[in-house]
Length: 233
Figure 1 (cartoon, rainbow, N blue to C red):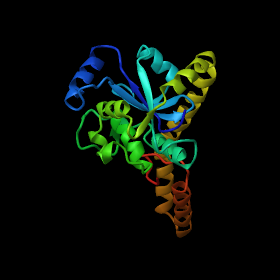
Figure 2: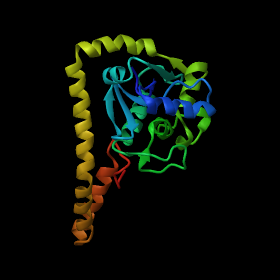
Figure 3: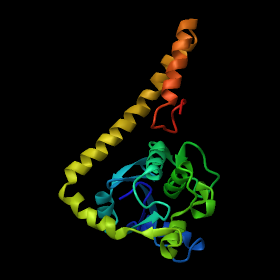
Figure 4: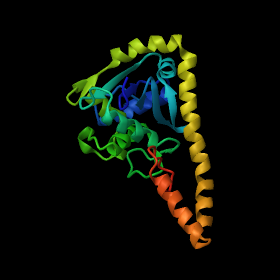
């Protein structure tokens, strides 16, 4: 399981069916209503209408879609390394964005729908996918086409099916890991406005405090993990 892997899901219910039907104009053999981006170790980041961009586990998605899923990996990614590190950070960058309700629109910097999120993460990691199509124009159907043709991607579903058994046996461990990561990222977002207020007060104060504020901003800008909502990222 590597960061950057893409989970293609055939959801249950009328909404999922209508989403699939609407995409047939893009790819006749479309079967996916939703896609998700792997952060590694069975954790995925995805965007939904009710929660925006958040984390989930493969084991939970398997239950939710009644086992109707598959996973593909870009051929440029063969093992854990600098590219997967970039992809993992790129995916996490968009955590806590709103859900973009304007499907196939012009896109924006604060919200993403499911396939747009995946495309944005790859773009941020500087890896071209789907022919370089703008993220806001990328749909689950485009990933279905890639998964069926396998020109630039490989099917790694079997790899995930094997790990799924371990996740079910050790569910608490995986849940704790995902919850801890989610809590960390949520806390950082909540505290960001307070950090900015402190810096702004320092910047409006004495020369000495202005220098402190400058160093503070430099420190924040140098953080390994960056997020879309942070002024200094």
